[in-house]
Image (cartoon, rainbow, N blue to C red; front, side, top):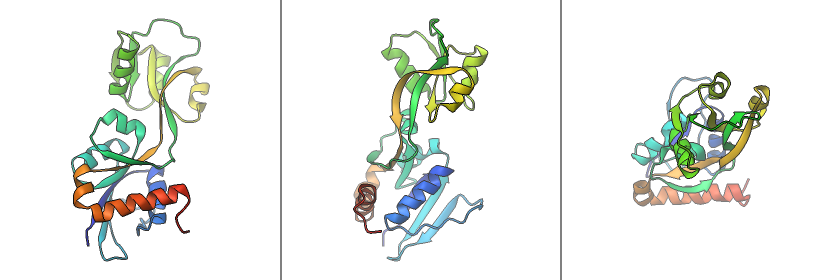
Length: 212
């Protein structure tokens, strides 16, 4: 039987992805607290499913370059990566917004934008006609506004509690995001017998028409 390799993001998205994939018929049972990053599971049909635990930002490259046949990744990360992968399903969890954020009431010209998403921030600045420098940072991006490193930041907003706690405000929503199921385009042809049914099963689960 044709085996599959899936790239899943670490953390809470991994747990939610594994739960959804189990409901779609795959045998995945990763023991909690382990340090292994690659897991192999024998499936009821005798095939082997290999699951790779990756940083969310690495999933698009693993799938695009064919190391993984498919994977789960946030739409925000997928847009920033710019990788050519097939994106058949919005899985619905991990919802958030990619937004322009400034200190509350700030009205000065935006000359510098800090972001974990430099490609998307640069595209936003270009669309708005802003001659702003884009600085790539990681970690607590909000500090760039609070310390004067940048006039604005482009970052993910989920609940907004961090913004309120730091007297920042969401000025504009650039995009909305949630977890997406992505597939390598070559694997979609060569492993059609496994990937097409998996996409259909996931869709049935999402639409509530799969058996429970």
